[in-house]
Image 1 (tube, helix red, strand yellow):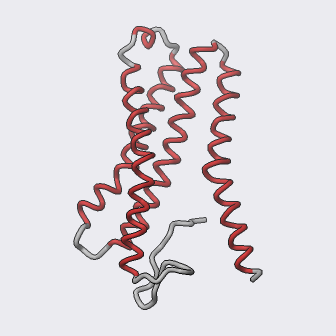
Image 2 (cartoon, rainbow, N blue to C red; image 1 turned 120 degrees about the vertical axis):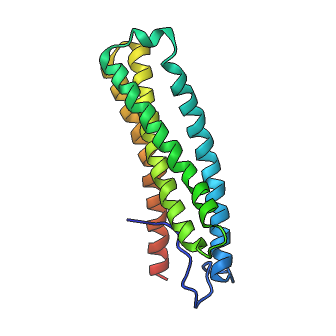
Image 3 (cartoon, one colour; image 1 turned 30 degrees about the vertical axis):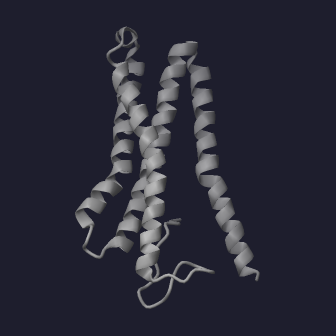
Length: 175
């Protein structure tokens, strides 16, 4: 289910209850919201990616088992894709600025951020798995903790917002 905010059709005012915005004003506001959201996620992804890149140049890396080296490759690849997805809205804006496409830009950027967050969660889960396999020496413990952390991400990043949305929709429907 896609809950990406979309600006209203050009023939009506938008912004929801209590707002009196033109569609372009709403698109501008939503774009500013997108930029604020992406700044937080982008920074985290870029820092994590930077640390991941440096791991291959440490003495411990050479001694990792084949599984762990492959897990590292997957983790770095996911981190690169997450970083790219979270930076994409900036590129889109550069190319599309001045072409009266901001509502489409907002929708597309929102989807790219959603994809970037999913990739970031997977990157963190894989990085945690690699770290815990090395730190604990117990693959079972590493998998269990990594799965629990990914479960927490799914709960806090997806389930809780979904439940809030459902509750809000239900409240509106019963008025």
